[in-house]
Amino acid sequence: GDARPMAAAAVAGLIGGDFSDLREIKKQLLSVAERSRERGLQASELAFALEPLPLGDLPPPPPLTEEDARDLDAYTLAKSYFDLKEYDRAAYFLRGCKSQKAYFLYMYSRYLSGEKKKDDETVDSLGPLEKGQVKNEALRELRVELSKKHKARELDGFGLYLYGVVLRKLDLVKEAIDVFVEAAHVLPLHWGAWLELCNLITDKEMLKFLSLPDTWMKEFFLAHIYTELQLIEEALQKYQSLIDAGFAKSTYIISQIAVAYHNIRDIDKALSIFNELRKQDPYRIENMDTFSNLLYVRSMKPELSYLAHNLCEIDKYRVETCCVIGNYYSLRSQHEKAALYFQRALKLNPRYLGAWTLMGHEYMEMKNTSAAIQAYRHAIEVNKRDYRAWYGLGQTYEILKMPFYCLYYYRRAHQLRPNDSRMLVALGECYEKLNQLVEAKKCYWRAYAVGDVEKMALVKLAKLHEQLNESEQAAQCYVKYIQDIYSCGEIVEHLEVSTAFRYLAQYYFKCKLWDEASACAQKCCAFNDTREEGKALLRQILQLRNQGENSSTEISASFFLPASLSANNTPTRRVSPLNLSSVTP
Image (cartoon, rainbow, N blue to C red; front, side, top):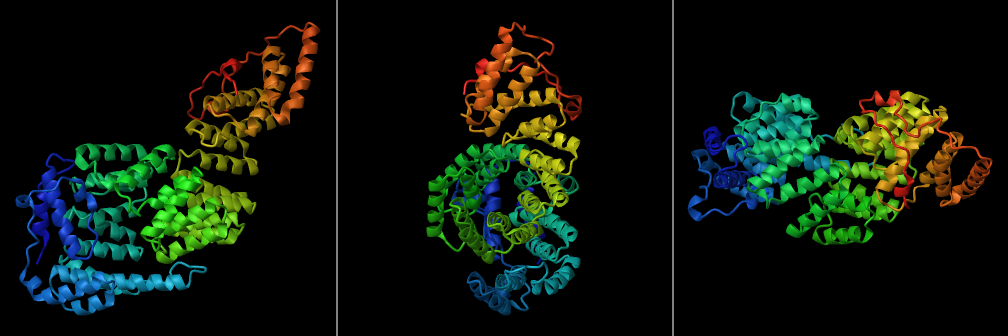
């Protein structure tokens, strides 16, 4: 029985980003959810976000064919074994079934049985896990059988989805993408195929060339892939329009928005959305590892501890739970314990990306660079887009004093996160070690321009100028740095502030700008490490003033940006003299 006409009917209703008829959308979701459930697949929880339908509007159950009736007993028995995760047993009773539904369950059971065996073997050898050491033995046979059916055009949307998964597992990425696109056309409402596409598309270019079906589900797909590709502005716009269209109650959308804010490191916003999500869905475990990363970055021990205990009560044998507990121990600097929990997460799911990267970080803390390198490499094998793993590899090679390697890995991290100042600062430091100072300057300047998270780029840039005796530019960077720090309004514990004031005091002194020099020297007196120099300078200024040296205006304190830097697409801005009246620590 070809399932295409029915799928076509279910979709004909709504084209493109049309959300005007939410009842029709709800109907489509309920009907595809029912068909997914029959095949042992997860149904999307989107339907829950929409208003319930009256009895008369509920979609009828999927119609039964002659073949379905013949396979019914075998199917019912096998489905109960499948639900108990007895995959081989389920497959055994489904041999020779002809109906679409039973055939899918037969193939899917064989696939899952192979995956389970592979994972069990992987766990036993969680030492140096080389790629291709453990394979899902079932994949090759499944591919042969499914490709025959595919050629004969006998696969329905679900069958195409499974065929795509098998191809992806065999690393046949191009073929897999084609099959998933076909699956999305045949059965646009099955989220699984869209999600698989998200994992295979590595850049915006690839996205352009896909001919995707024009259905409202595509909007969800685009929002998801934009989040993955770090196109966060676009993603947030899409999610907002989906909320406005009527999906405000969808916990999936809320969690995706939180993840998007996490990706652009808007930590406060992400935290508040995760807290909201926990109110709406208190037993949720998905994405809680991301939430714990945010709590970790903010050093929120009590909150992280509470989250860890809470998830442990809900289900301690979940990957996310293990990661949250790992983060909790890591924050308490119990790195051995943390690594243990990340290993546990990987035993539950060796393809779980976050755990490999986090385990790498723990090995770094324990000064075990070779184990760290191995863990990061695994993360990259699982997902080439994991910038944290590339960055981690850069750091390990930095510790091993191998700047050429560092450069390669930091570059990859920077390509994935072009606007992340941490990657740029790391790159700059690399270039400095390799004595490529022009490149280093560009990196620091760019880091400042994109919004420097750690507020270090200007200082590093200033020190470079100092080294090159470009005193005017150095002074200028320090001026900017001080304005930056004080405009944040934090009471500053940055050691570098005193460095900046010390340099500026001496610079203005050389330029015979006594007022500016003494203002900066006074600031130096506020810091322990520059107090004596500040006092000495003030005495010198006083002496010179008494000798009647007039304030000189040889140099105007408003500089231009050095040409070499402003060439880097940054508008040349005039820097006004440092107005210290506004700078009160």
